[in-house]
Image (cartoon, rainbow, N blue to C red):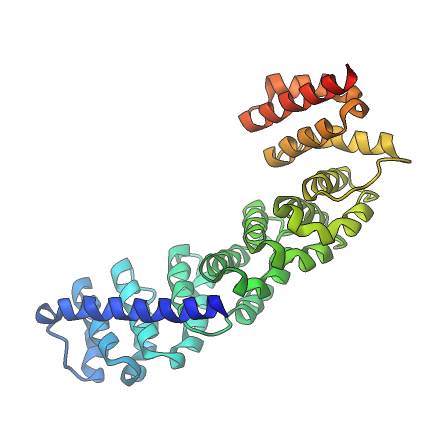
Length: 340
């Protein structure tokens, strides 16, 4: 409810700012007061500044400028950023009638390989200003494209930006973001995981489902994100314990680290040696966050982790990440203290 109120206030402030801006420019905008038909023609002016002024004039008309939507959509793909922004603002001012055309434009923008991601970002920002649930449509567009595609990555970016603006009110994006963690394209995996981390506790049920996904990367990243969320993900504990028997060492290691970070009590026995092997694997994980958390987990084991001292010393001296080196140093101190 609070986020909805904030969203309503935000769009009103945004439109007020635009109105103030337009009023300030009124004397220098010769297109103000013209009818929609003339302004549509002006949107094709060869001078970018004139196209901007035409779009701003349409913005002042609000819903009365709805006949200009097709022409404004074309300006969303203008070579000049200032024109694209002005066209977007005009469509936002038109209101709900512009929502569907904006989605169609977003889809078109990510299909065009010669179109910059900035175009899609501009359009998705316009969509987010409406008080509509855009997530189902973004999800549909995501599944329309093949894995490892630029298009899927662009949708994930749009959802991440929506989470930045709406917080946990955008938690309906969690299911598709969990799946996106398994995309073959690493940047998409990373951005999806980071977006889920921002959702926090509200994403936990979907992350728990991700732990049993047939795709290895989905299971791995779901465990990593649960660890990032920390104690608020405590309900994932029993599911993470089951992941300790995963066939993939990296996934098991991520689960061990997550269990330590959320504070869920579990026994290493009777497969203690296997768990230690998993932690050794995790010390070499490409993700520095996992390496640091693994060192911390070994430190909490105290004397039980004596066999890890040599590996931790190597990490302390050679890991490229200072946070990992510090975590290894602290773990060594805890283990040695427990042994004395």
